[in-house]
Image 1: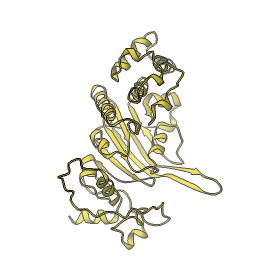
Image 2: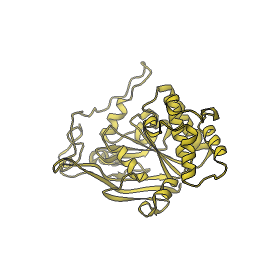
Image 3: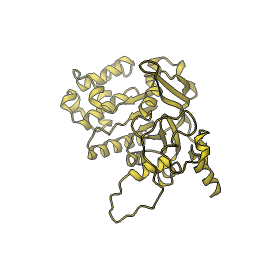
Image 4: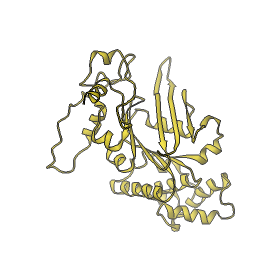
Length: 317
């Protein structure tokens, strides 16, 4: 079993709105990331994926719960130490790069701040650019002189500059063309094959997550409703919401007929004060679902699901 390098325990985040309104962006999320592994996190917009990313890297403090890296509580780490261990790559590379800084200056700033490779910064910068398949000729360019894919490669190089053990990627390909997305994904896989590094890959693109992830967690309204290996979650989904996500992925072959599955009712709804959050959208809902919120339990082979009906049917089978 792989060493756990990151563990989140019952992470919750509340945001105070205007008046007395409160938004519960995260509600008790627990997860584990193994050394050299990739955890994919999927879910629709607004389910709390990006909030989770910000909590894990320390950009926000959780309202409740805790996280630890390699057995050490992240709350006990100062900002510099935490940044050396875990880095975040944002969705829009242009918004995360200083438009007034050349690529070389942006990378040098990271090395200088963390006192890395003193006296050999230029050599290290060249190595980082080679690592992300850009080449040294890009070192003197400004962000506006880069394409979207090139700018994202620079953002990845900057994250790798501190030699972290974990990189959180928050929808790193959603702003890119389809062909460029594949290049970035293959780049990340190649880097992971060369150095020991763990990824948390956040996306709403299931096909992309399948390609890059070892395990997958499905989020809905601030909670994880299903998790497991990619083949368990995407090929044999148990939670009705995961079924809906899997059915939404188009099949490129017109001769392939999908097996018939129960289609959830996709009506807009929010968190419930009682019972399962998915009850108003679920075609499998039972009276018990409206009274008791399901817990995320293992149904075998580390496949976890938060659904009363799915857990019972799996036990029967």
